Each structure stands twice: as C-alpha cells, then as structure tokens.
Length: 241
Image (cartoon, rainbow, N blue to C red):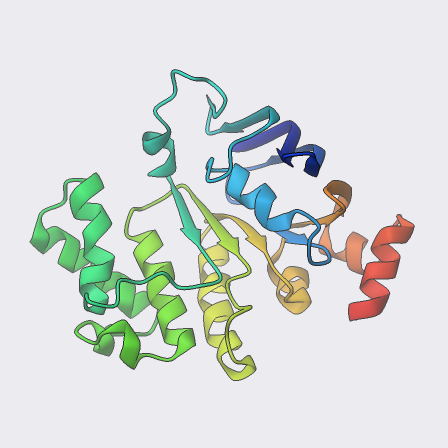
C-alpha cells in the first residue's frame, strides 16, 4: 500500500470535518472520491500531503508517517503531484517556464534537462505547440492540462486531483479527463476528488463515498454505482444519476 490512512480526523475549531477515516490505496490504483459538497472530500485530499494539518490519526505515504515530527515533509511532497480546481499557473511565465520551474529548483535539473522534460510532457497532454504561450492566452481546459504537465514534471509517485474539471466550461471537461485516463492506463497512482461520475465509473478501480466527514462506503465502481449498500449512498446517487 502506497497510502495508508488510519482514523484520520480533522477539525477546524469545534467543527469536525473528517471523523475517523480509514482506507488504504495500492500502488497504481485509481481511487475516486465522491460525495455531496461540504462532505470533507477536498479536506481529505489535502491531508494526504499535509496542506491541511492532521488533527489526529495517521497518514502514511510510501512508508513515511506524516505525523512523524522528524519527517522532512518537503521531501514527501516532492513525490506527490497535486492538481487543483484553479490552475495556479504563474501568469508572467510562459507555459514551458511554468513546467520547468519546480524540476530545476527541487530536482536540480539543468535548464536544458527541464526544457526537454517539459516539451515531452506538453506533447503528452496535447499542447506541444503552446510552449511559448502565456497562461492568459489559453482556454481553461488548456491551462488545466498545463497544470497536469507541471505536476508530472516532478515525476511523482502519486497524483492528487481536487475536482480538476469543476472550474471548466462543460465542453472543455473531456480534454482534461482524457489526459487523466491516459495517466491511469500508464499505472499512475491517483486519488481523484470528482463530480464526474462517468469518469469514476470508467477509470476508477475503487470509489470512496464521503458524507458528513464519514467514509460511508467504498467499493468497486460497479458495487458503488449499481449496488450501493448504504442508504446515504443510494440517496446521493439517486439525486445525481
């Protein structure tokens, strides 16, 4: 298991957002996290790389406990790519410069090595011709694909996606999901918070349903979408499917 979560709890003041989450994720597994707004999905994801401090419980990433105070978290984070709802690209840097920055600073790649890797990744996400463009000239779908390429430039072991298509116009969603499907087929370990149930059904190896900070149910896409066991899961799916 490359990710192990044990009795994970997260509170903001007196508001407990996650209440005792337990799950494990295997290497090369694609896990989709679904649930209503405010259910704790994004908080759960952000706890996996300590963007949110864990209140109690334990998260172990590739053998490293995130609650171990001796842990150098930046070293662990370097192995985890994260793609957000908003693209967070540097507007004053070109597409290729956005992608080159972290590998040069963190992985100590030379400028030429970083540029070569960046160009290969832009080709991978279908944007080879945009390397010298600036983010402001790109569509939302293109910007999100650049953001994915930027995360991949660190050659992470794990990719986390926090509703990566929710800020996109509907006609642009497919181009981002296509890149994510390719990553899944290549064996990337992925945890995806998503409202795209078609993607979760088609690409996910496992689906987690969160509601009210509780991991209500988990199973294969077929188990969750075709034969959910919990009434809360059934009620949620009945509203959206």
